[in-house]
Image (tube, rainbow, N blue to C red; front, side):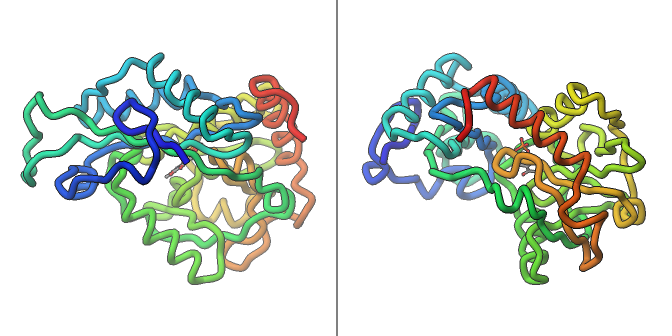
Length: 284
Ligand code: PLP
């Protein structure tokens, strides 16, 4: 299969990563995961905006224009004949002898992108996923889509070890987000989700979900909620590029709402699907 390496399409086995790449040595870089439905990019503009915003926050210069980036991703989809799946793309601060200090301006960011085939997780989206509440021990710039995912990896593994699908993170009893998802709850018909500040990643699917709230006349508040409120919620769900809107069935082994009913969630899922179809064409 083909990948993008520094702006060019090339075969995966023809490139190698330098041992002094700052992404490899420091996790000094940023990334995006973009969904492709019917061979078309979904919410590309939002993803590319967030990528450039992340770059700015870590003072990295992206050596490509946004349009250039889109054109090469579309070429990649075409070359790999990707119909349904994702594009993973990352930028690191480049290759330089190991030193915490930024390299000189002659060192360019390294861009890598590749595709992966995947279907919508329809069974999970219907049945719901189990989750475990875990302390959020990450840093205070979770709004940056950084390659440094150790805090997320450890939390996620803790959930997996407990037989769960996702970790729900909290700081001092206040829920922030999942290890690789955003989380929302429904209480008395209103959707609550953490405000998009430095404590969470401003998820693109979270945005699509809020748009779905508008189009279905569901009230919502970008307001933090506690673990206690989470456990008593009528419904709870996670959102992400690959999981769209996925209900949470049980948290810490305790059922949330009525399994399989998911009244508000189902309404939002339908509006989410309509949004995908409007941009990428009919889903089968
Ligand atoms: N929060 C974290 C920590 C994530 O890693 C992700 C996605 O990978 C999300 C939220 C969801 O973001 P998006 O909807 O843009 O995929």
